[in-house]
Amino acid sequence: MTRTLSLGIVFTAASIAPQAQAQAQTWSGKASYYSGRGRTASGGHVGGHTAAHRTLPFGTRVMVTNLANGRSTVVTINDRGPFVRGRVIDVSAGAAGVLGMRGRGVAPVRLSTL
Image (cartoon, helix red, strand yellow):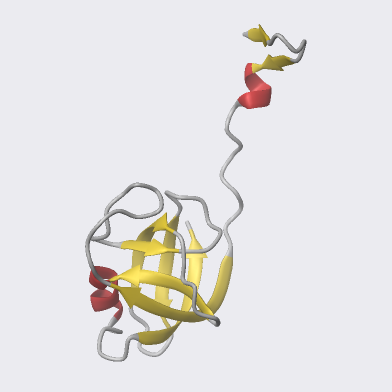
């Protein structure tokens, strides 16, 4: 399929198709958690096992492992943040419960994109 725009630019289906999923990435840092209700930057809802990250695309699934106790969970990125220096991810209260970090509020974590 080929389309021609009025500017004379030709786009083929291959040139505008979504790019393949990026390679898996892994990094470490501090995680915090957020609670509350309402809409996120992506228009979704806070809840379940969701998270905020500064740069990962919305919909990216990330394995988060609490390095202090070894507990892990998978979250879906649907918001932007955290906006506190030194933190790499904000997880929902549900995910924080699974990770065992609700009492302290902040935990050292390892993130791996899936």
